[in-house]
Length: 128
Image (cartoon, rainbow, N blue to C red; front, top):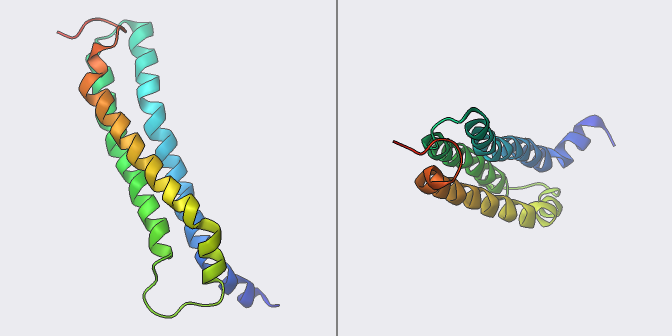
């Protein structure tokens, strides 16, 4: 088996893994931002409204994660003919991709809750 044949067999998988890497990056960043902001607000005694603002950023970044889950799903919806590696790749990754999409939506939802109610947390100074 040559290098070209090996590349062809991993074409779909490579595209999914590339998008998944970005999905993980955006998801972790989205979750980290309100945690870091909440800790900073608590330690520095800043206004709790900053926690709400971090929820807005969280929701926006989680949307980017959702775009990457859509990109992964797009690999499994090709237009035209597919090669023999498509079905095994789809069987291997379909459930993971669906889970990634649900995780991204959950992070957007949590970000919206933080955005709306983050200033009510008993951390930092009360919002003016």
